[in-house]
Image 1 (cartoon, one colour):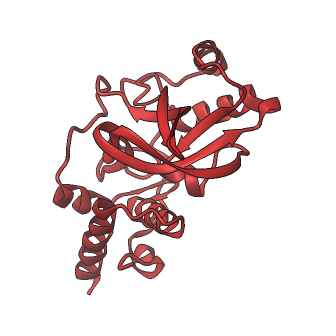
Image 2 (cartoon, one colour; image 1 turned 120 degrees about the vertical axis):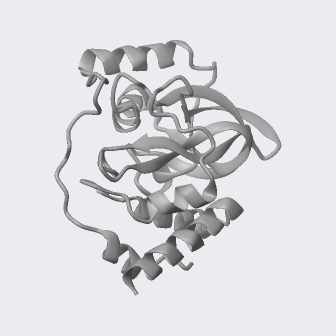
Length: 225
């Protein structure tokens, strides 16, 4: 990989948490419990509750999971399509977060949520992935293909009605933002590097992300040469 920890260290700096996104309401426990209850009510029948992990949930899980099976999700693709002015971006130097967006396909991993702790796991996942009332990274039940069988699973996909949705940013624009963005939990470049490295370790090569990390690395190197 061209994008390395040494390059990311050049970008990183400590910044304060700017606080909630303007115009969005922070969710409370009642809000999160209602989202979980709705997901449970709409959960497809079956003994197992599966999670389709395709990005940071692979390398920074929100809850305990059991096993991991390669899977293909048709009709969705990875895209840096969420405007970030908190966490890995700031209002004066925004970043982008990855989500599933419509079109194409995506290879990821199916992870089983422990049967005895499904509600707790869903609660942890929602609190991690749904930051505010915009519900930009929306939980939904999908069908992923695993060993030739379509398996119901939970996935987080972008809500195109959210004001934080960024439709189809170019790879050059995405690289520009990720090479500079920093938030109170880290950099956009680190998020990209960890995701690509983990996918590669699983035997999942995403050509777009691979090209993107090369462009981000080149921009950082040129900026600090």
